[in-house]
Amino acid sequence: MRRKSKYKYNRNIRYSYSGVQNTYVNHYCRRKKKSKKTIIAVISVLFLISAAISAFLILDGMSLFSINNTNNSNINRFIDFDTTKHMSYSEDKYETKIYESERYLINYPIIKIDEIDREIKNEIEYLAKCAEASSAKYTSVDYITETADDKYLSVVFKANEYDINKNNTVSDVITMIFDLESKKQLESEDIFNNNFYSFASEYVRNYFNNNTDTKKLTSEESFQSATTANKLHFEEFSLNNKQCTIYLNQKAIFGSGNKIYNISIPLSELSNFLNISLKEAQKGKTANPSIRDDIDPNKPMIALTFDDGPDEKNTQIILDVLQANNARATFFVVGYQAEAYPDVLKSISDAGCQIGNHTKNHANLTELSDEEIKEAAESVDKIVKNATGSPTTALRPPYGAFNDKVESILNRTPLIFWDVDTEDWSDKDTEKTIKSVINQAADGKIILLHDIQDSTAEAAKTFIPKLIAEGYQLVTVEELLYYKGITVGGGETYPW
Ligand code: ZN
Image (cartoon, rainbow, N blue to C red):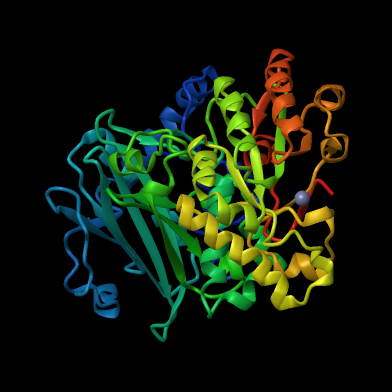
């Protein structure tokens, strides 16, 4: 049985199917942790053997459940299963168990791979205990299966509880994923790396935010805390050839309700987060992922940022130095320059560098009307998107000037400022700029420079290799935040 850390060995806590604590359900069930071959386990087994033998003797002859004998049972008449469709794996074979009390029924797949069928049986015994402990009149557990690349099998169990009036009072989902080649059950961490959870959190929040029915609920603190980038919040999911579906319990995220939300993410968007190889995800892998995977989070890193470009010649000089040093930076571009040099925008993007928004006319945003602020940002996005295919992913207000209004209007991307001002724009002196960068360099710093200055482009030829020689990884702002584990939402500011 799969280890799920949310199932703590605490006998005093009652759990429902997927571990969502639910006062209505009053389940005693705990999910068992995957057994490890420890000495303790061996000793326990020895102790338990005699007890187990007696238990089997008692159960023998009074079979806990009947198989494929569903037609005339109370529960079958109560719950209409005619519409049940199993998107079944290969041979479309499944069994139904109706438990003795006729209070619960479980459909489950037969995969015909012993190791996997054994895990599934363990799981349904667990589900049966949950149903047994439930105060519901009837419980049904049904399932679907999905496969990805004919190698990964997902089994999605959905439990529904009904009261005496046939109202579906509680629903929950439990998923299992198997590797059909190794015949082993996979844990979340076998499938996703740790960076998946920030992505999933944002994806799910956007999903509910874009849905008119749930939009107003997304500001609730309970929703926010139930959707943080935590592995435990995104444990129930399935995979097929095209997408990963995350299952979320309405009660768990909104405090009440019995809906299950199925949120599907195209695999092509998950290529940076998968520990397994899936064909569709490979397609999504670009030559220049915005977050490189060869950055060492334990080594120092710096984000160089260049404002006020793109420049006709200096931007390319800086890009050449960056590329020669396997380095990246962020360019905050202004509208009038971007409009004049779209091919330079493309070069920035092709070099894997990040493009930020520095507004249309470099105006002080705090002096503009709401409409003007919006237009100042959106017009640049249009130009950048036309040139590179993607809009900007950060915004730096000119002069570092912002207020609450600016933050609330410019809420699509983070607002990024700086730790170090090199004053290259006033010095216009190559040597001074080199010194300023090198003397103020430190791990995690965002350094402000300007690629429209000849002296800065000249200085970059020296300070970029020098920073690398000193052990710094030169990253984009996006990479810096990512590897430092800092989340900056749309309209939120950093590092101020
Ligand atoms: Zn500027």
